[in-house]
Image 1 (cartoon, rainbow, N blue to C red):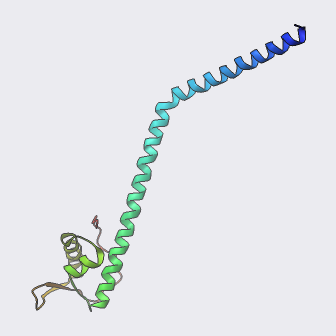
Image 2 (cartoon, rainbow, N blue to C red):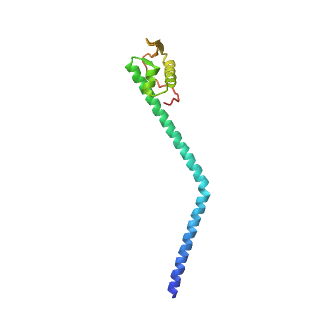
Image 3 (cartoon, rainbow, N blue to C red):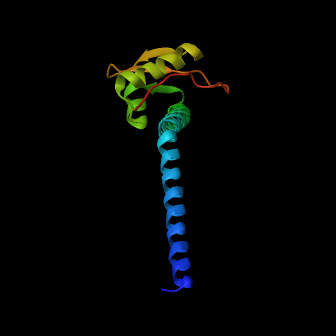
Length: 137
């Protein structure tokens, strides 16, 4: 073996040792930072879920208020719980809660229809924001 071959083998050996050192250093850093990375990931996940929930709530509120206003226009201010529940896909008790909140806010009147349903009669609406509630369909 010549001197040149020995230098080449030694150079490869040093390169392998440097590579192993870099890999072990990287793994040590990752191991040390793993708890921090897990916490940051969890916090980021919770933040994302909260923002998604808030967006869904805003979208639902817009849908409910838009549907409410359309029904008022279609029925000249008279709405039943059944009609509102059917159009919004809310459970009847949630639809009643929503209409009761609006009735209080708008000083609505109640009438009983010929078939015994309670009609909410709302006077013409001004531009008022819908009541805040957390109803889910």
